[in-house]
Structure formats: C-alpha cells, structure tokens
Image (cartoon, rainbow, N blue to C red; front, side):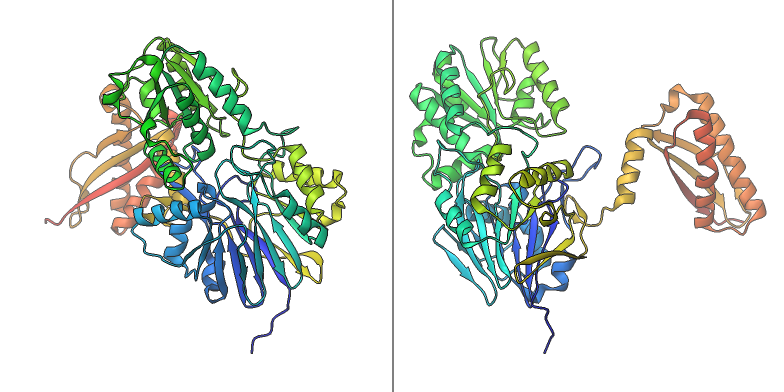
Length: 557
C-alpha cells in the first residue's frame, strides 16, 4: 500500500513565461488529469525547428496515474502537441468538444496515429474519477466550443479559464456567465486565468464590430477584395462568408489550413452556403465586384498564400491596381518585420491595404483585456490566484490586477513551468518543482536537436562553415598534398585567394607539427586542427566559422 499525502498539486509543463505549448497538470494521490497539450512555434533564433513542445518526463514517470486529457479548445497552442504526447505516453481518454475532436482527429490522421478513446463533451458533461469531478463552462473565444474547466478536488475547487474574453454581442454563443457566478458563489479555492492580454487596458472589441467594419469595406469597394485572416479564427471566417453573401461576392480560398477550417465549419453547421465558394477558373466569368479572395499569411509567412501573391509568384493570382487587401488580424509578437515586408510589397504593386492600425475595426482579439480579467476575478471570487498563459510581464501585470480586485498579494502565485503549488484543506502553498523544459521538433526528429545543435546552426548562419580535406599517409606520417579548403557562408574562395592561402598554410603547419610530435590518432588530429585554427581565423577575419576537418587516410610505405 502506497502512502499518499492527500494533497492536490497543480503545475504547468508549458504555458508559463511564454505564449504557447500550454499544458497544465492536476494531481491527487494516484490520479492525474492533464489540461491541454499545445505546441509553441519557434522564434527566429531556433533555426530549422518546426515546433517546441513540453518535456513530459514527469508524465512518463507517472503514466499509470493519468486518467485523461481535457481540452479547453482547438487552437494549436492547446492541441498541437497531442500527437507527440500520444506517441510517448498512454492517455486513457481525451475529452474535447466536437470541433476540437474534428481538429484533433485530422492531426492524428496526418501523422498516421490511431487513437479511438476520444469523448465528445458539452457544457452539460460531467467527468468523474475517484478524486476529481470536472465540469465544462462555455466561454467566448475566436474558435467555437471553447471551455473553461471547473475541477472539484478533495481540497477545493479549481477554476481554469482556458482562453477567453467577455463579448456581450458575440458572433457565436455567449459565455456562460451564470454558471461561472454559481461556481463563484459556491466558493472557488484557486483561479488559473488567461493572461495573454493583461497588458492591454480596457475591453476587447466585440466580434460583431468587426463584422460591421468588414461589411462596410466590402460593400464600398469596386474591385476585388483580398482578406487575410487566421485560419484558426473560425468565427471570423464565418462572418466573412456572411458578409460576402450579403454583398453578392463569391469566395476563392487559398491556403491549406484555411481550406481545412472551412471544411470543418461546414461539417459543424457554422457555414451553410457551400455554393459561395468557387475555384479560380469560375472567377474568370465574374466581375471584380463579385469576387473575394480569402487566404492565409497574416504574419508574413514566406510560403503562405498572401506572401506569394505579394511577391508575384502565386500561380493563380496576379494583383490588379484596384485590388483591396485587408489584414483581418494583429501581429503576433516577433512577426512585425516580416508582416511589414509583405505590406510594402503590396503597396509597391499599387493596391490599397487595410490593417488593424489603418482601419481600427478589422480585427479583435480573442483574449480578455484588463477590464475583462477584472470581471472574471469578480465573478469567480477565488481565494487564491495563479495567472497562466503568458510571458512573465503578462503574469506579473495580471497579478497586480488580481490585487486590485481584493485578492491578497500573499494569495497570488506567479509560477514558472515546473513550479508546483499545493492545495490542502482549502489552503494553497508553494511546493517543490518537477522536471520541465523545451523539446524541439525538427521534422520527424523529436528531442534529438539539443542546445548545442541550435548553437552550431546559429554559428553557421552568422559565420558559415569551413571544410578542410587532409590526405594523410598513416605509415610515413606525412601530409601527402596541400590541404584543400572550401567554405559556405564564410567567404567566397575564388574572391579571397590570399586569405585561403594563409589558412591552408596554417593547416599544413598544424598537421605537420602534430605528425612529428604526437602519436597519430584520427580524432586527436581533427581536434588539434579545430583548436588551433579557430583563433587563427578569428584574428584574421573577426569571425568563427564551424571548422570541419575531413581526413583521408592512405596506408602506403
């Protein structure tokens, strides 16, 4: 019989101090439930990396305790890591809404993963285990069927908001404020709340205001309208379709993820008029005022449809002077430069461009701003508070907002991934830490790409690579011919003969000294060349390329 402490523990394996790869864990004795399994898209300095996911060592070590994975909604930063999780850990069941399930299943099919233990849940669903009872509370976000989770534990009620905003005139259903208030009245011990927009004052605009603005733009423009938006923002896509229907425009769709979202919206009854979508050939028979192009590429992604259109390399779309391009989005931090490049190229083509800065109502966030965060705090009335889903500055600001809403400072917890907080008889305290961190996904390689490889890639991107081929007679211990040097991303060999001659001469000197004074060993010789050549090249050029000696061994007397 194992001894258990009867303490309920909560911690994040992803989502704290960052925006993305959300994964939160609630544990009590021999039971664990997981909330979300997202990915984070890499920053520019993670060269060649496709995704960043969680270090799930803790889950592997406690696999037999896991009772289920609960999904708050279907965005990539909440479901994108499920296929990687399932390949490493046995998950008895996944609980998610119908739309989230459709998105998850598509990911699993794409990665050839068979998994059938997915249960579709609604607001009426209740999931019970030995220690936990989980309720689902409808929230408003930029994707349908988003949930907050009310987790009843032996030590108190935990309320996890998921991603949310308060929109009194939403495109879809209202958030279930009444159910939230009922839970708040019963008594919430710990609130975990979305911090993404904690730095923004006021309240986010209603999605219906975007609907009105887009309708105004589309109705007044006498040319083609090209609208770029997030493929994951299904509500936005829904009212773009409705706006085009009102204004007698047909829609051409470009972008695989956009096509997937539209198919999903149709399958779930969010888009009913399938005749509004046409292909490029059908558009040739229509007037410009009857055409809308809906595409991906709001963040300046080089391979996205809008970037290819702006660069003039799209196979099916050529810009016309009377086109109007609408960015129905806002920049994700770090993407401003690439977005501005696309916008400049569009202007150079002579088209008119609307962004969220030039036309203030063409986008609204799906995340709560300061006043809405206060509403959540006032409705839930938690005894303790832990901000989640955000960079440190967002978590810090959200804590200050909580204090302004009468949560004592000592009852707030700003945590890092892996920090454990414990609930015991309604009291929350800090605990130990569990192993956490980033795991890099590079194509089919998961976790094989470590910090040293990333460091080497950065060096190659900035200082290049130098390869030297050495022909060594291992019997006579002599360098047979002059070392051959070639480079990539360092210098042009043909244009720098004097520098190349100096490097080749130095390599010959290093090799000959080694062969005279040391016992020949392949690895030792490579290391000696690298060791002495680095400072030599750095003194000559101020750069430190990666040096790769290639030794060709010849055994002749």
